[in-house]
Image 1 (cartoon, rainbow, N blue to C red):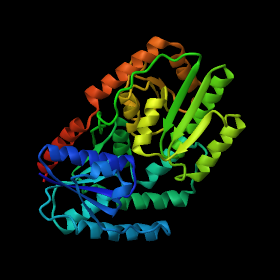
Image 2: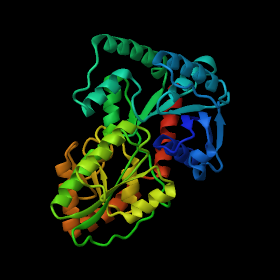
Image 3: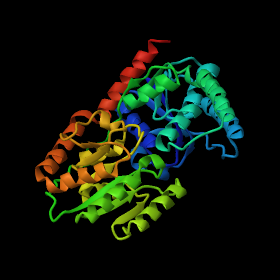
Image 4: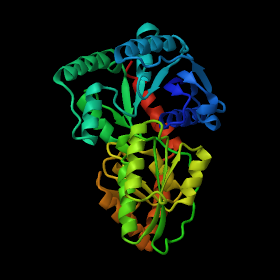
Length: 396
């Protein structure tokens, strides 16, 4: 089968890029022909170690944002141009995340009606974005006229670009429910994997002297809820625990959120206990997994959460918010500790349990690795996606 994987940007190191490249490599192992298409491409900026042996076609253009409407139509012109670059003998289209599915829709309309299986990490509609923001910030509001305009924009987007998709895959049941509610289409859950050779198991020693190094990772956005991890560190230190919090992630993505967190650290007197490590290389991220003792994922309304699986693969016990995709497959007390969102007290209590209870710490470390080995791998992900492609071909 000849497959075109479409990704909006391949000049950054993000979850979407890692997911698409990992899938492409495994699909090739299954005997498929795979080519990647993107608007902008930088081999050095997008997992060069995963790009080896893969062919990438780039438009070398993506419109700069001016205002929503100008940008929207500029994006669509770029989508049509990229669609024209896709090989005519392609048998399946596989757009990843937002905007890329428009490229697939244009190819189907202008060139050839072949199956398109959209891998959706997050919904692109305005109404969903507003709803999600209101879940994170209850004070979020918008005037009625803006809501009406959003509804019209969403109607156009759904009917012109999303409905032509022959199948939709999502990473978790939360997104499946959102797809049905906001788009009106069913989706199948296909969870992405990790490279187990890349994330080796590190044998962990029981924690001593009420001391622990805690790791949190992610691009800085408010739904990451890093403030809960910081507040939990404050609670623990006030209770006599010697904890250090290391936060990995690009804080340039939302400078106001980073400034809010930096102020919280200062107000809590945690300057010597909380480290903002910024954006790091893959090698440094693996080193952080090995060097820390506990991984926290306090995110709210977060799809899947591949970093949780990476941490578990290295043997890090994980504390995970219940409103994440990862929580759907984990078992509290067996391979993770699950906590309610927006609850620093619960995060602190979970960390306290892992420090004090050596049996719990060892059990979560070992069971976490075992779970990932048995359930989360690129080969399994590629097999499931390949089956989705075959099913979609039967619909044409």
